[in-house]
Length: 382
Image (cartoon, rainbow, N blue to C red; front, side):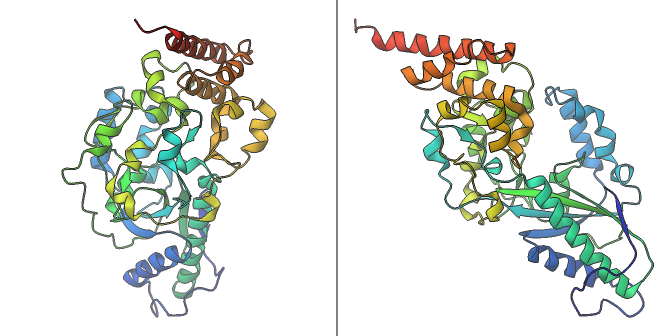
C-alpha cells in the first residue's frame, strides 16, 4: 500500500534536523539509528536506479533460468523502474533483519533421513508482515521528523519485503549493507541469515557507498549445492534449485532431481550452511524461532497431516503458500529418499489413492524406490 504522510504522528529523536529545511545527512543518520532500534541489523540508502542489474535479469530470463516463475517475466519492467511501481520514488532505504536461531541444528537434521529438513527462514512466523511492519514504523519516524522541519510537505513511501517486483539484493548492495555472494544471496560480514526489506521513498537522500565483495577465492557454495544449481559464480539456474523445486514449482519434480533433494521438503540452506561468513551470524528475533517442532520432526509424522491440520499448524507460517497437495508431494519425495523401513512404506501407502494425481505419482515413485532399496538389502552376497 502506497502511503503519504504530511503531519506529525509520533515523537522521535529530540535533536532538531534543521531550522528551516531538511538536513538530509542528519536525517539519513537518524534513519539508520532508528532502523537498528526497530530490530534491523543494518540500514543503508540507495538511489532508485537498477539499470545494471536489469541487464543481468534480462540475460537470466532469456536463458530460461527462472523456470516456471512467469511472474518474473510479467513484472520485469516494474523491477527495472522503481518509480513505475511507486510513482515519485527517488531513494530506496534497504534494511536487513536477522533470523538465525542459536538452537538450530541444521547439519544434524540433514544427515538424518528420517527427519524433515525445512529451510531455516521458514521455521517460525512469516517474515513478510514482520519486516514490512517494522519498515512502516521506520517510515512513521521519518514522517514525524519531516513534520518538525517542513510541515505540510508530502512524504510518499511504500514498504516491501519479498512482496513485490523489487530488486532486493541489488538495493542492499547499492546501499552498502551487503554484497552478492557467489550463491547469488545477499551476504554480509555477519552472514546471510537475514531477510531484506525496502522503503521506496520520495525523499532525495544521500546514497551510501556500494558494498565491497568479500567472497575471495572461496567456492564452497558451488561445490556444496546438492543439485548443482549454482552453475557459475553469481549465477543460479532455478530449474535445478531445491528451493524452487519444493516451493515455486507447481507440477511434478523432475525425476533425475528427486534423489538429490534428500530430506529437504521446503527450501534448502546448503549454500548458506557451508559459507564461512555465517560463523558470525547474529541471533534473530524470537518470532523466527521454530514452531510446532518443525526443526526436529519425522517425515512420517508430517505426511500424516490432513489438509485441516496443515492449515491449522502452519497458520502464520510462510510454508502455507505451497498448499497441502504440494506439501505431500515434497514429503513423498523425501520418504522415497529415506531408509526403506516398514513405517515409511506404511505411511506412503496411506496416500496411494490420494485425489491428486500429483501426489499419487510421487507416492508411487517413492514406493518403487524404497521397495527397490529394500530388495537390494535382502539380496545375499555373491
